[in-house]
Length: 75
Image 1 (cartoon, rainbow, N blue to C red):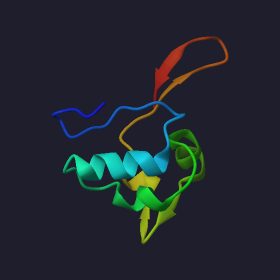
Image 2: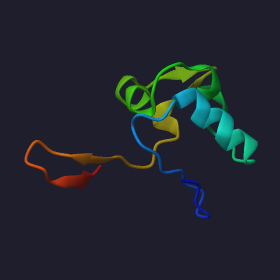
Image 3: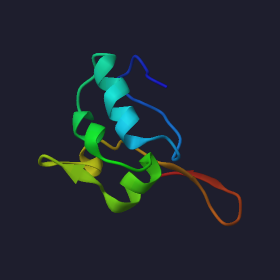
Image 4: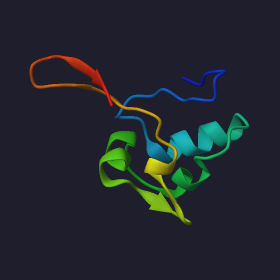
């Protein structure tokens, strides 16, 4: 989901490359480097995937996760 506040919300299973391409097509900047990285958003976050001097952590605002006890947390 693209928001007016300049944030993208997506699931961990989303293709990281497709996210980079789609946000760029929508006129957003910052994730262009992702367009050449295979794998998912979740994998990119865990590995801090990067290319061309940019890293996932540079563009990440927060992560929502579910703990082993079923609690939802925002980090």
